[in-house]
Image 1 (cartoon, helix red, strand yellow):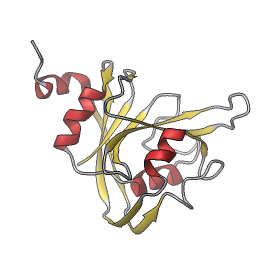
Image 2 (cartoon, rainbow, N blue to C red; image 1 turned 60 degrees about the horizontal axis):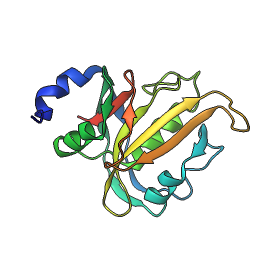
Image 3 (cartoon, rainbow, N blue to C red; image 1 turned 180 degrees about the horizontal axis):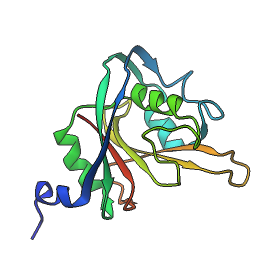
Image 4 (cartoon, rainbow, N blue to C red; image 1 turned 135 degrees about the vertical axis):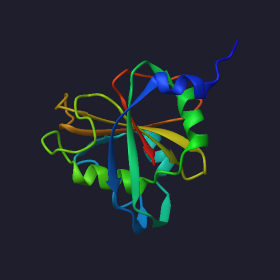
Length: 168
């Protein structure tokens, strides 16, 4: 018997904080998301593929609710959330990263190798799960933010303790 996702959502996500993020009149992926700038250490190929030609216009300031995953969660949670929430834009993500470029700067993003998860619509109009994590220096990668994007069909599991950011 399939579970009703709305019945299980409160059991999967616990509210932990709120934050405000500024919008802007125009934002493009190109010229903003660059490895080695704003604390970004690695941009995954999927992230680039899904967003590299995206142009966003008239992005409003937003208020974000921040939740903590208290159990393992998969893409089915995000499919449910996609129907329930307003859109979060690349511009908002960029502003969060710019304001918290490292693990020493206080901010809403977790910086201990735990995922910060967002729902962002890609260039082709398909919503993606964006996974942003901070890692210390690893091999030839400098310490910084690692940006990944996953399909909603991806069977990825996200760890308890991951943060999920949803527009208020």
